[in-house]
Image: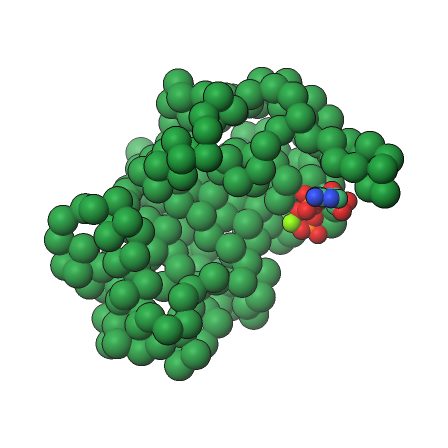
Length: 232
Ligand SMILES: Nc1ncnc2c1ncn2[C@@H]1O[C@H](COP(=O)(O)OP(=O)(O)OP(=O)(O)O)[C@@H](O)[C@H]1O
Ligand SMILES: [Mg+2]
């Protein structure tokens, strides 16, 4: 479970404090798929950065499965992230000098997990890129690079997956493929998933939609999925 308590972030802009995230409290149960929506500048990436422990809050705390990120030092945070959090960015962030398969292996090698090449192969198969394992990022399309990035994010079986506009650079059809893939991986790996998106159609795939406006929560609702319910 992810628990945010009175979490806020204030930055200095030319010496003047600017609150980009007002104190917010939010609980996300284990395994939930949450979409975060809101206009540009509303604080979505700030919120994700705080949840990932990539940025430090000005107040409050972030707890993931009981562990307080806000009490960890940089080394502890890096280790915690490696074992617990997968991150997918809008601009893929693959290492250009490594092949697709090597990119997927990197987090497993850092975490010293065994069988990295085998799991990387399986993950590339899951994202439909077995034939591209030996290709470098520059030889792949945007959608293919994002699929490699998703395989990499799931490599260490993180209990939490954070995705910041993973379809922002893709055409809508490729975007839909990516979201379908994220949903399937979410289902199969059982991760708690938080996805930032501007696209209401994509947000509807989530179980819950949290809206941000000017650094505050401006809506928080569950999404009904009638077909899934009917299917049991
Ligand atoms: N380190 C910083 N210094 C100054 N301003 C910052 C900093 N980080 C964030 N901001 C400001 O905080 C606000 C929220 O930024 P954030 O990146 O979280 O928005 P966002 O909702 O992700 O927007 P977008 O949809 O455009 O990605 C913006 O006005 C941004 O300029
Ligand atoms: Mg953003």
